[in-house]
Image 1 (cartoon, one colour):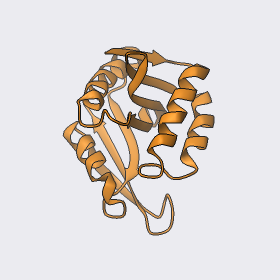
Image 2 (cartoon, helix red, strand yellow):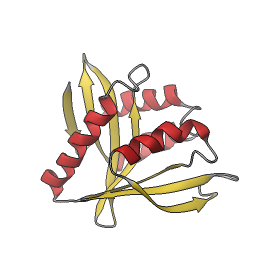
Image 3 (cartoon, helix red, strand yellow):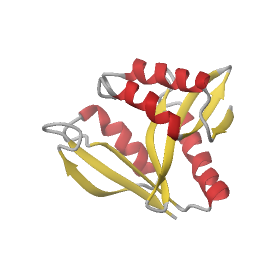
Image 4 (tube, one colour):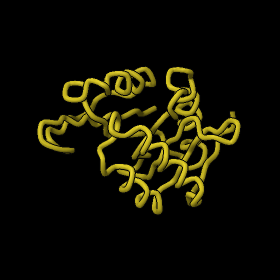
Length: 153
């Protein structure tokens, strides 16, 4: 498995990440998320793992409040639970510290309270040292709860 960093996400990578977000919608992403992310990637960075010419897991991120902010993390269909996400997260933590001197990461995700299919996602982040710092009711739509999760070291 190779880990790749793209400061300026190249069109082929953008297209591959876009296709993965479409494949994982509507289970994990809102219907407008793939198109939004496709545009956002013009101004963000990507860190991903690749094996056999395909992305296994991917983080799209930017900076926010003096740390890294994960806009989106995914594991390609068929690779969930096989360690690709954990390997990527471990490499990403080292990458942002070595590349930028940053020692914190934040992200927002749906709460399992309103989106039960996000229970494994929240468990993943907790396993990797993230804690819930804030909750935002209805940030991403009526009846939803969004969690702000952070990790600092």
